[in-house]
Amino acid sequence: MIDSLPRATIIAAEPQLYVTDIAAAVDVFARQLGFALAFTHGEPAFYAQVVRDGARINLRASDGPIGFRADEPDALSATLTVDDAAALFREFEEAGVTFHQPLRTEPWGARTFIVADPDGNLLCFAGKA
Image (cartoon, rainbow, N blue to C red):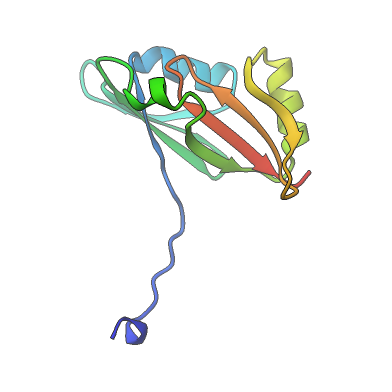
């Protein structure tokens, strides 16, 4: 019976985004979104990880765009939970980020905004403030 097994705790999630240029993606995450490079792998690099606070995003090189985006232009690649969505939105505005969706209050009360990376990966930032 599964209920009798010890319960493990999931402590983090690390979404993987497919990008066509690792260096360009790392640059956007660092320069505009405030992430730091944790590591790259391969020569030339085909994998990297960027981090900011508790978020870790893995970047994987791809030869081209991922097919589902053509059919689902608003499909999210990842949602990052933040303590103050409005403050982060203002920070990104000052950094010159172009938004896929500006800051808004959702019907369920969350404050959200969406950013697209150069490869069309949509990152939703969601919080209460």
